[in-house]
Picture 1: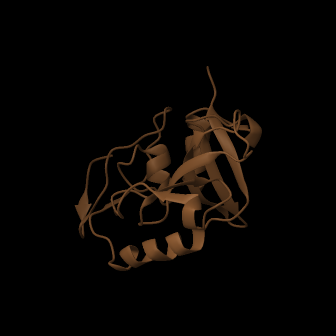
Picture 2: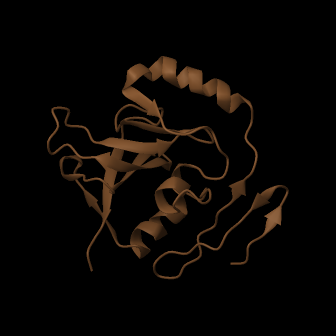
Amino acid sequence: MPNLIINNRRTISLQTAEGNDIPNEQYFEIDESEWSKIGSFETKYGASIVRRTDPTGIYNCHGLTFASRRTSLYENNFLTTILKDDGYIEVQASDALGGDVILYFEDFGVTHSGLVIESTANSLVKIPKVCSKWGHNAEYIHFANMSPYGQEYKFYRVRKK
């Protein structure tokens, strides 16, 4: 897939481990409202979240999770292809380890993703801690159950071949 720049947006070459192209877009501008959302998030979630970055439009949550913060992925149905082609398997929350992926779900499918950064193995709190990007806003470190994306989530890990 060639890199294309249209209306201040660019695509990059991105593929699954099996060679399937992954549709993506980079946005080079963010709406000023993203800065005001920071205060709303910090008021709602308080000390249970830590903001890791400033807002950016270059990547979204799926871009953080599956594209190393290089671009945004918007076609949720393509996440199934990524999971299959890259060899992900579902793991229980109690078995989640740093580097595993968390996907949040609603009726219509996947709504959000992030990376596990701390497991529950040696923790009093039996909920994994994750890093995820909230829309075009910032990255936040938070417990899996403390985000605007709901309480229905699953964990995935690349299986060893």
